[in-house]
Amino acid sequence: MNRTGRTQLMESQRNGTASAILRTILRDGPVGRKQLAAATGSSFTTITRSVRDLLERGALVERDAVRSPAAAGRPVLPLDLPGPEVLVVGTHLHPQRTTVGAFTLRGERIHDAARPAGGSSTEARARDAALLTREVIDELEGSAVVGIGVATPWAEDRLASLGPRPWDIGYDVMTEAMRSTTGLPVWVDSNVRALAVEHHWWAGMRGNVLTILVGRSIGLAQMREEELVWSGRGTGGIVSHIQVPGSEQRCGCGQVGCIAATCTDDALLERAIATGALPPGSRQQDLLETAPEDADQLTALRAGRVRELGLVLPPLIDLVDPDLTILRGTFGTPEEIEECLALIRGRYREIVGRDVRIEHRAPTAGGNWARASAALAVHGYVNAPLLGEDLEVESATPSP
Ligand SMILES: [Zn+2]
Figure 1 (cartoon, rainbow, N blue to C red):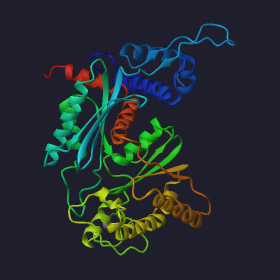
Figure 2: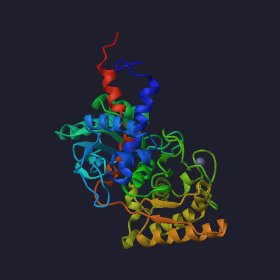
Figure 3: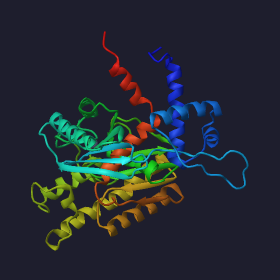
Figure 4: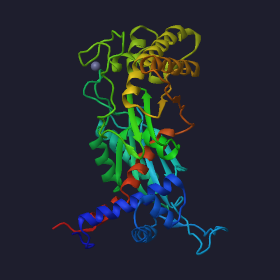
């Protein structure tokens, strides 16, 4: 038993009920207590007790009563998530910059900041990102921050052909830097998993949704109902060493034709520089160059990748068997991306015998990575809303 007199089982049930309430409201909008009991399968008494607790903590608010003309009896007091009083913060580590944003639990942007990436080691980079995050939090006077989400392009540094770089920060290093600098709950995960939870909670993509991100690496993440499938920690959903049909590119892992060596931004960039299509020191975004002088070679590289994705992605989609697949990443012109979708649809029909639902989503304007990062915090928070309280209790208890 802890000092509140509750057993571990009681704490876990308390967290479970609070989580079900917050998830229901985040998903369906404001609801009354009776509807909450029906939606969560808990008793009315349990819901009433948990709601009282959450109202006291400021985790829920009561909106104005609505009286349904058809229904007799007491008016319903809908319960809702707070507005700008309760926020989540998202921090994104891009190779060239760090962006931080503060958002309401429904994903409305309240504040943001960006600055060039600092630090020449992974520890210094993590510290730099944590300090910028704390600066943003310090400016949010009058709002409570319930957690921080951090999305990093870090996927796997064990076999990266270029070796780990300062932005390739391991999750533990990042979590520790962020926690010790802010004292808040922290969720660190990969870019693609951040996008997957953002699609679910803040873009209304419900059901079984597969997100595929084509960027420096290619990663998969699946939201099935409200569960982020596969483990965190950068292990599940990595397809780097799956072979692309027909590819003869040599991979650092010893195989030939791996996705990592064939159709990632890193692979294309290496090839573009080696063949003189781009000058040394070029960056990811230079691959999208369409100016006439470099256009031919780069267009050919991009077209090759579109064909490769059209071959390697359909069996992976079939393996996961989602209701909807969302392709992310700006890996070509709009026409090239459209061509890629057409190839995927065609190949899927050939090998699976039915149609696949797949769409591409372009990034929204301005700092959208901070929002996806913050979605990790919303996902973490609504799954364990009393976590912050437990941290407080722990830190307030003097060590023996
Ligand atoms: Zn490989």
